[in-house]
Length: 579
Image (cartoon, rainbow, N blue to C red; front, side, top):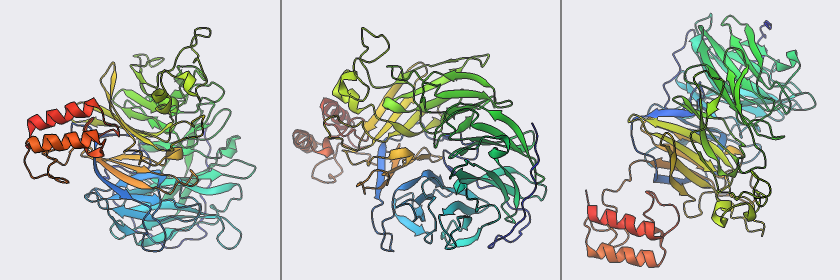
């Protein structure tokens, strides 16, 4: 099916004067939600070891200098510039947001934008392109009773507003909740020699929307707008992905929050102010912030969805036609349940997915791409009911469904994850669990977990599982988006305004570098004396008996628990001494 939409006229432009051809998008190390325009949710890194050591932990509850806390990292995630600077948009409440710049060496917030208007801070992240930092906002009421959306262009050094663009002929639709998500940039130019950026709107009201807009980043002109309602099926939520080049044109995948049928579509930017609908189809379920990721061979678009109604939870769609090549059953309510959240992560010929009940797993298509294997899966150990094979002995929301209480508390929802593939051929999955399940006795600790897993091929190994001594704030709805730097450092947010009464917000940097070439040097406290001897051994024993966090040596970076593993890990460090 082909349709050509008319080019929208520009009714209101603030700034964004015509500038001719613009530079290629920046080579940012991690850009937008789930990494770069292709949105594969993975990165190739130069190091070869996992990021399991805390380099710093920045408190985002502090005053930003304007009488307000900085606030948690938005679901839109983080961006990392070529110089290593880390950028994110905060979300303090439904109507206040700023963009912040963080020093990667110290974790200090070094710059902030002006207060940006609107209520779109939850999903509107930031994107580095054309020498600027871009973000979108949605204003609930611009003072005239009309919703307005804006595209902001910020200086990446100072975060000063360079200009913003708003087209009230397009962005004031009563059935839209405004622009959602960071702008994603094309990698090929339009007919004017400029790069388009792509944005989409969130539906609201009675009629779902979900329009996609192509905007010339040099002029601010809206090149075209594509509306799913033209073909009878809009979406209330939805996010981009993948966005990729094929046949010399940009292809924009879009998968929305459509509870029944045909939530996916692929639209081609023809580069001349028109679009072509390549296909309509895909999953018959939804995921409010998940979407598609392109396989490395370009054959499949992988989409994760909830398995509500016991539908499949991972779909492999033909990138050319939208047909379903294969899908992973949801197995709802059983000990084999798959219920995946967020965008999948693609690395090599595997697709990684995480979700409910602490599940971390991967899938690999067969040679014909009509089926798959599941090399391994990590999940809490549930007891099979002998009278009902495949189903747990007790409800999955209660400890009776698991082998131990620890399994129950390790079975929460994993809402953010990504993958790093090292130069030495190792593959690491970094995941954040938003919280443990609700305790039936009403004592839910509401803390998150940071989990590092290594893919060993036919099996996997959990390298680190930690709550950072119960200090990692719960991260509902994917607020802990994970970004990976080129050297393998991992950045992760903690905290969410979606958990009432929780005001602990954090930003972590995890590194493969332990930052200490003499880890067994504990005496005299707190920093040692540069030598390892029996004084350090007895100091460790003191910490160990007191269950002091300083004795938490295992695994590297600690896991919040002190036991014999830590004793033997200390002995190993003691024997090595100072390097």
